[in-house]
Image 1 (cartoon, rainbow, N blue to C red):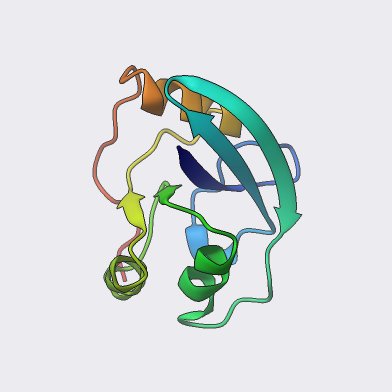
Image 2 (spheres, rainbow, N blue to C red):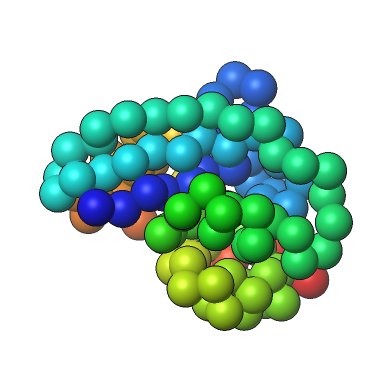
Length: 113
């Protein structure tokens, strides 16, 4: 079982910049089936906070459009897998479905800091 976090906008679409998103979709996946989804408000932006906060929510994977290298390293310290370069025109469920079925292409990290 996986718990996948996706940073989203108010419209439920992937937020291109991970660290400044307002919401997260937390989607539980069992095999290739999405079993539950929860939308939670992100805490105020503070460097290093989100990896610990998402680990407390038992997140195993993060799908993101872009993320700084330091944040990626902190996620690894919390045993959370990070996938960057996700297409920013999908909603969270579409993105997670594409991820678990290997039909979504992750490209270059769109974050340059």
